[in-house]
Amino acid sequence: QVEVVESGGGLVQPGGSLRLSCTASGSTFGINAMGWYRQAPGKERELVAHITFDRNLKYADYVKARFTISLDIALNTVYLQMNSLNAQDTAVYYCKAGWLAGQHWEYDYWGQGTQVTVSS
Image (cartoon, rainbow, N blue to C red; front, side):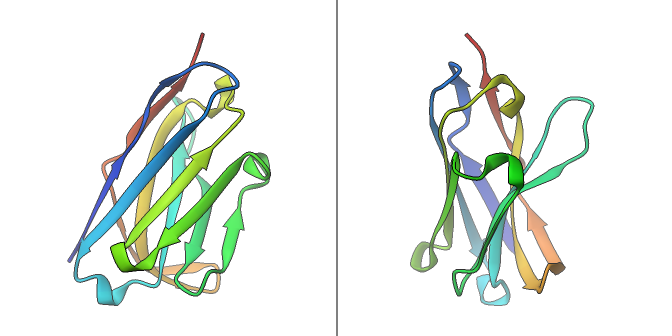
């Protein structure tokens, strides 16, 4: 079993920045990728970015050049640096860890989510 815990959410003004962190613990030998997803009120959960342990990256088009995902394999921790935030980025941000084969997650473990609110 893998436990996934996010941190770093909060309230930020438009144009501001936040850095989210997510750590996986437990049976982490069975994971090869970690990623961030988000869910805004009334919308479906969507991909933000994911990264494999061999450093393959994927970003959603709407976050390219604003968000950066990075990974500390030794700590089983993934980060999401978010810059130039706007109101449309307001959502609960979820982290997951699991086994990514191509673009398909064979299995995954989700965190409980962290709220990001962009408002003046």
